[in-house]
Structure formats: structure tokens, C-alpha cells
Amino acid sequence: MESRDLYQDIILDHGRKPRNFHALEHPSHFANGHNPLCGDKVTVFLEIENNVIKDVSFQGRGCAISTASASLMTEVLKGKTLEEADKLFKAFHAGVTGGEVEAMPEVLEDDFERLAPLEGVKGYPTRVKCATLAWHAFEAALKSGEVGATVKTE
Image (tube, rainbow, N blue to C red; front, side, top):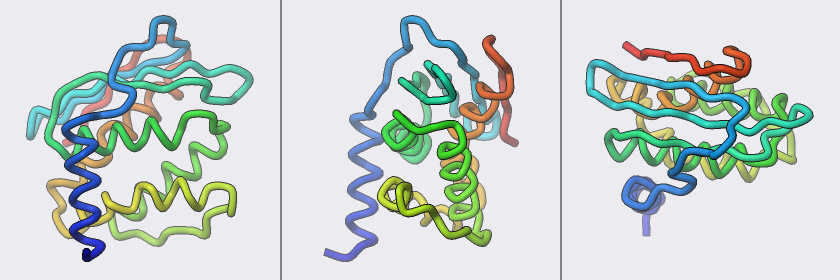
């Protein structure tokens, strides 16, 4: 099986059966993301304690890439420190936009590799926004403090 086929299978699986697809009962942070060009919408919920992401989830609707990205994001961010999450976000963003990906600390290498199926969107600029929407909502949730925020990708 080619890696492209495997990657497509991973995206389709997470798109059809997203992990952590629910609202957290008592989030400490949350933010809404919306891409008005395609209609994708996502809300990212976080439970942060002592600079560690104790729990993360999402709800929303969107294409398979948007949903798969949010699903994979929640899996890799759970249990990470905010510093580790920031490194993953920056590396992921660089990977899907064709930027230069900095060396990943060894402790994060496996998590970063789990996001690799989404790097194929860099060849399709309109799909980059689909892959990054949940990540931008995550970032907005962190920056908003303890109340909700909204981010639009256009």
C-alpha cells in the first residue's frame, strides 16, 4: 500500500468517525472557528490545568479534511503542555503550508508524524484552510483567556 493511500484512509476514517467529537462539560477555554468560503464550522473545547491540556474536544461540521484535522488535533494535544502544543501547531502549520518545519523535540516526534496525512493539502491552497481551521480555533481559545472567541479563516 502506498503512503498516499494510507494517508487517504486515515483522513477518511477520522472524517467519518471523528475522535473526541463532543462538547466538554466544563471547559476552561473554548473558541469557534468558521471558514465562510466553504462553510466549515468548528468549536474547540479545552480543559487546561497547570499549563497542561487535560482534555480537548470539538464539535462542528465540515468537510472530511476539516473534521479529520480536528480529530487528529485532539488526539495529539491531549496531555501536552501548552509549550508542546505550540510547537506542534507551528510545525503542523508549516507542514501544510509548505513552510520550513523546525526539528521536533524527540518527545513530540510520534505525535507530529500522526499529523503527516494532512500535509498533502499543501498542494491545494484552498484546502489548507480546511486543515488549519480547528488549529486556529485552538489558538484563539488559548489567547481568549477563559471565555469563547471566534476566528474566521478566509
